[in-house]
Image (cartoon, rainbow over all chains, first blue to last red; front, side):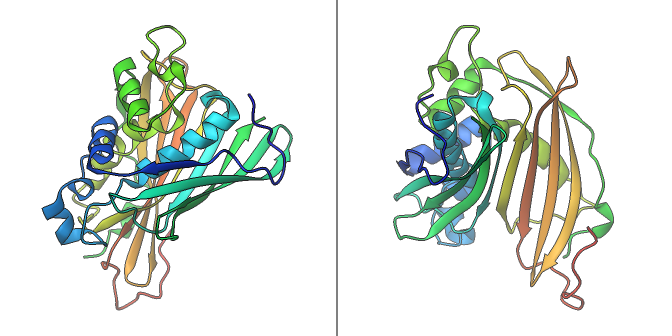
Length: 131
Length: 153
């Protein structure tokens, strides 16, 4: 493990685009085939943005990727909880950040956040990893 | 139409999920994961933590949302999600025994918040693999004549 979990430390951030391709790949991989995430006509009827949006779980998966990489592997990850606050429109890039807020008894607490190109918070939450 | 409050506490028949190496690989690639163990053909292969989504959210929640007595409807969004993992990651060949239940139904304004918990254990040991807690927001279906009432959770 190369990342040092100390209070105030920022995890190496991830910036990732969403697109029709990433959405279809995530749908297939996760078996969540909700057409809201790739079908323009369907999304036009029901999407809060009027267009396809990324799976919430795609954004949570990227947060987990960031947290797990810093922690040194999936064995180290205790829990992760996030709230999906705004949609992530396809065709835009989101950035995922994490800040260590506490380290106690071998467990680090990390506050996580996902930010859309627009600057809006698409996701926020907290995870715990063994350090 | 509002969700049926009497379903709070209901558990659904458990289901099995067999973890496959190729499904782990597909999931890792979809997220751009770099850990070579996720893509390994060897004994070191493990799944990324949120691979749990692929056996709790669809297979687990669909049975529950398909319960006609619950009154689920398609105007929904994923409000929040939590995973609490067990002592080790899942690996190819693991068989998981998963049970879904309805933890609570609450009302906020015009919307209803359904909290579900899917408990997944390794079939051979009974140890916890992951517990997944989801909040699904049903838009606009809260009963308006007593919308001030917070649900029966």
